[in-house]
Image (tube, rainbow, N blue to C red; front, side, top):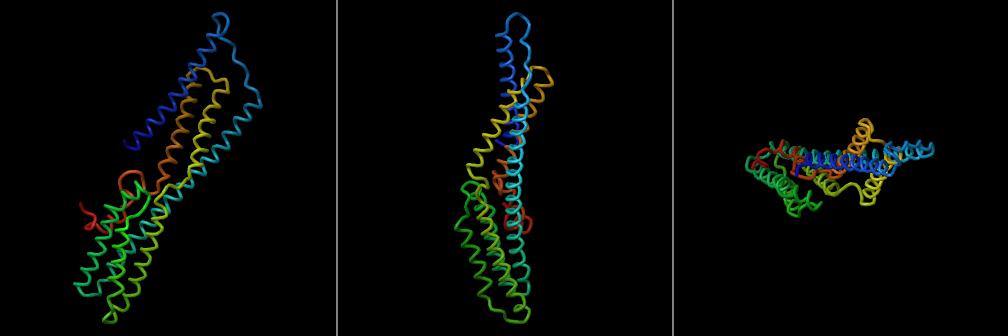
Length: 261
């Protein structure tokens, strides 16, 4: 099931629940009223309106902080991916001053690592929130290829240390990618977000809502908005996505040959 279908289902379900509960509640009140005329609607106490407003404000602040947190974590994860891919690309570019046989061997090592990251490691990150040992071995092979090739002339000597620095940068970015592979928000935060959503939507029924088109429309839109924001937090809570490997596009752009099917 695609994310868009999940979003549409969740929003429609939240809207339908609120509308059904509202209609059934009004029918129950009308059935209990004496005579054919509907029971008069009572005024909502001022203190109740104040409490509803305060609960809504507090929940909006908490929800906004959650969205900001998962958005920042996703941005940091994408930065780590771009840094890792760019560092490996720099290694292959700086190796142009070396002999052709060494450049080919180094390029093969880098391509093997990139292919493992995109084809093997990315699904593992999404499903198990961890990196593969094979990826660490292949990156270590790249470091060995760079470190053990002693420079034989001035140009190679100038490229040697920057290449080592780029490999170290790729290793640091890989470590950052490993730290961001799991979910951002802990379970207790999710408990608070879902409980707050139920309470906030439930407070609609304390405001003496009626069955007019305007009132039902606003109630449905409000519940759908809460469902949409919760879905947004859930989707961004996975920094590298929940399906596919679109977040690995930086590797595909810089190493199209290594990631080709």
